[in-house]
Image (cartoon, rainbow, N blue to C red; front, side, top):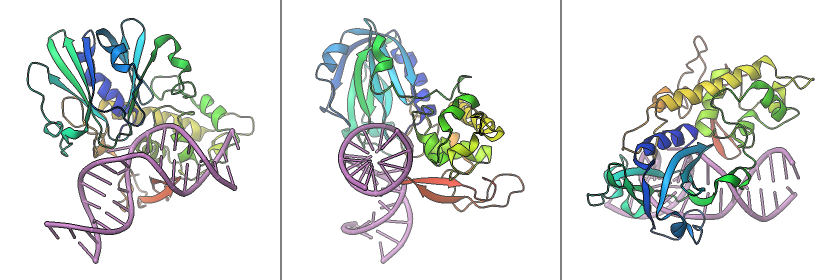
Length: 296
DNA sequence: CGGCGGACCTGGGAGC
DNA sequence: TGCTCCCAGGTCCGCC
């Protein structure tokens, strides 16, 4: 499921329930997700207070008192929901518009919150998600994080940075943007949307956006702005809800209504005056949606 | 090192 | 109704 905007939406949704709460117990209903849970996971987190919730790329970070941090990745189909801890547990499908099964409720964080007991439940049908725990002071050197590129939020990501990453590369732009070592947090949807917004073909070599002196061409500046804008727009919309992503209170994000190319194969291009048709191609085994007429 | 296909999983939808 | 096949917001690993 989730790219950066969806994970950020999850972080914001969980914050009121989790920040400042006591994590009484982490209940693991199976020994693994994509990877096995660390052997001491439940022991380490139980009885600890939650300081804050953060995010890096597509990872949710749960900072605990004492310097440990829980790392959670939602994979393709992971979601969290919050429940009142004084009420009986409701099945997983109660909250989900597409009927997620209770059998995929894999982790339950039992909390003593500022407003009483609560449960935060992790549901993940495909189990591509995973959790780990590490020390906050060594987080940046953790295998999941050490090679990550810049965040596409804020003002850090700029054309000069991408020029240094793309210089000399024959790799298609689509693949270069999906590579988390270049930009951390983009996925299939937002790469397609950002390329359409900037009028660039996903098939074009990344190196063609850099001049002979290693400086960004104007097109790369446009792309950088498009990336930042589409991510900001998507966060403001609560992310995109296609198959699995829902907010923690069960409501849907609505950025999917703003897609210009993603999942719009055969529909007319929305660029004014273009007249082209949105086309689907496969790159590195994944669908790319673009307008061959106005994306050069 | 770069790029690609396959693997990891389950479920929904289309087509027959 | 039921079967088969294809597809899915991600990432890792092994192979050229």
